[in-house]
Amino acid sequence: MKRFSLSLATQSKKLVVEMTSEKEVTIYDIASELKISASTVSRALNGNPVINKVTREKVAACAERLGYRSNAFASNLRRKRTHTIGIIIPRLDSNFMSACLAGMEEVANEKGYNMIISQSHESVKKEAENAKTFFNNRVDGVIASLTVEDSNLTYFDKFKEKKVPVVFFDRIPPDTDDVCVLVDNFKASYTATRHLVQQGCRILVHVTLNSTSNVYADRERGFNVAAAESGCSASVIYTSGLNIESGKDVAFVISQMNPRPDGIFVSNDIAAVGCMLELKSLGIQIPEEISIVGFNNDPVGMLISPKLSTIDYPGREAGILAAKSLISLLDDEIKPEKKFMLETNLIIRESSKRR
Image 1 (cartoon, rainbow, N blue to C red):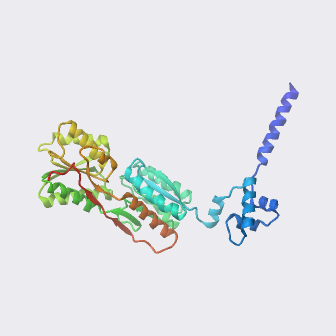
Image 2 (image 1 turned 90 degrees about the vertical axis):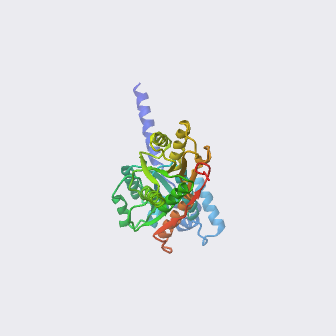
């Protein structure tokens, strides 16, 4: 029994020694194997044309055989670049945000950058944690769309102190000197509201979030100005979230209003669809009794009957422009403009057409 225990202990010790003796294969191991200098190996692995093709192929084959792994982290530290961009967005479950990310990824891949994507879930605390994580992981730059919560945004200051560029898109800070990519939300909302007026609507409602965010504040302002110019009755209904359920809740409130509104402008398509579904279930005809316009041109607007009129927000173009702006700052190319304002379009479908 004692000899068996001693044998197990000896085997265990041997296993530990073998495990700790394993080490990463280095360029010096490859150099020793091929009887060439380490500097030649390094140049060959990096594809330097100074090293002839035959030698480069021999080095690549040897590296593969020995299990060599390049230490990109150490290399990036030496170059003071990680070739990584941090992306902070409110949430991923949004067709608009998916379109923005697709545009960013297209540019990042072309320029040799990787993307790390994080969600704030509309929480300032989470947004600050995401920013801290990106800073500690030494991202080269950040692209961010802010939460709807109020914040002093001091957690972005550390990037500026280290000269790490930050580009904001869609939801931007007030009075910022950073590069921003957005649409004219005031103009888009004004256009949507004027369309409802032109269809004969006179009692208007705007469904939105009670937020100081540039997006929702500007849309509410555009609605109010257009309604006032047209001499229409106007009211605003604030929701806790712009989703299907909140849209249904709003529809019930609207159905009980006296006089009942005949035109509704909703700050996103998802809530607009929820509103339409509930109004229809209550026996209210769209657009004969109530016309509705949404925002974002989400595909869900084409799936409901009648199809939803909406403001088309070019998400992919916004993502492309945000990524290009950031990379031009990183590469010290021509400095981009401070603010890019993208064009929106009103897409008129059956949900609002009376005339």
